[in-house]
Image (tube, rainbow, N blue to C red; front, side, top):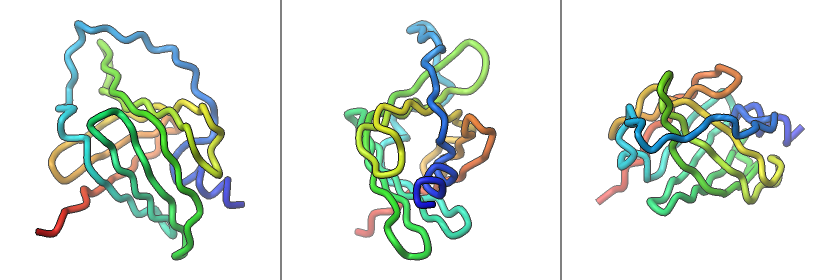
Length: 135
């Protein structure tokens, strides 16, 4: 049950083949400098937290009903294409619920200073809020 909850929360669950060609001449429709930082997303009883680093790594967790269900990490990169939105490619290197090596692809609808809206490959919309650092 934990695995299913985590996969549903992340919009992950099926292995995605890397079929999209990357082209260095395609201009991204988002500013990649806005992605690094910490983000949270509330989905029903699930709280997802993820931190993207400038170096292309991510770490995150899923909390369900106040209990830690999963901690995960891996690498990320942005993919731009001629048609469609820029996407985040996530490759999982550590997780209790997601198979190691899973490659996930989420399209970016909005990326600004405070909001990250993703569409999962299952066409589920996820809205993440940036975690503000208190000064």
